[in-house]
Amino acid sequence: MFRRTIPAAVSVAVLTVGLAACGGGGDSAAPAAEGGVELTNPGQLTWCTSLPYEPFEFQQGDQVVGFEVDLVALIAERLNATPTVVVTAFEGIQSGTDLTVGTCDLAAAGMTITPTREENFDFSEPFFDATQALLVRADSGITTAEQLAGRNVGVQNGTTGADYAAANIPGANLVTFEDLGLLTTAIQTGQVDAVIQDNGPLLSFATQNPEFAVTTEFDTGEQYGMGVRTGNTALLDVVNEVLATSRTDGTYDAAYEKWFGTAAPAN
Image (cartoon, helix red, strand yellow):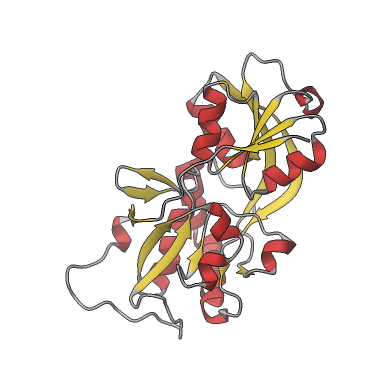
């Protein structure tokens, strides 16, 4: 199967998290984290993500907003810390490099829990069920994987979508992109005929761009989790506690409906 990679500049940027409830307060000393959690930067929960990945995390003006952003803000609030996002390449996140070298305390990037990634860092309990999806032009007539033979199919580097396409779509020409923004631009400009990626961001894209459609989904049994450095049980325990509490107190459901426009599936 032929593969080629579309080069892209890799940038790292620190942006504001778009949640007023968790904003910093003036020039006062940063508060210490609670629960015995040691943070890379005292008083800040530094978390890594890769943009854009709407509706989970994406840039709106100079802020990063989204469903997973709201969940991270709850974790920061529990730690009495200010959430600070570091935007970096997905490869550094999913490989565990960013966590290992201390770029961030937490990885939250619409990331599927996989055995390979579990060797690189520790995952939280799952917080979102995902499948792979096929995005095409609405008038293309493409509805099955078999119709992709001989066509250019866009995937994102380092993702389970790329793995799924390589294993299950023989005869397709896989074209690899570094982030979701480049991937969706490629189908808009005709560089690729189809995109294979997680259903959440593709459904969001199709809703905003009705000339495109998700014509089929592939049930891969995937689940998203957040990541911490291997052995950082103090932070992992807090993350799991907050995710569980958000399910029972209604904050998860409220965030889900806010960003997906529909009620959250039953837990």
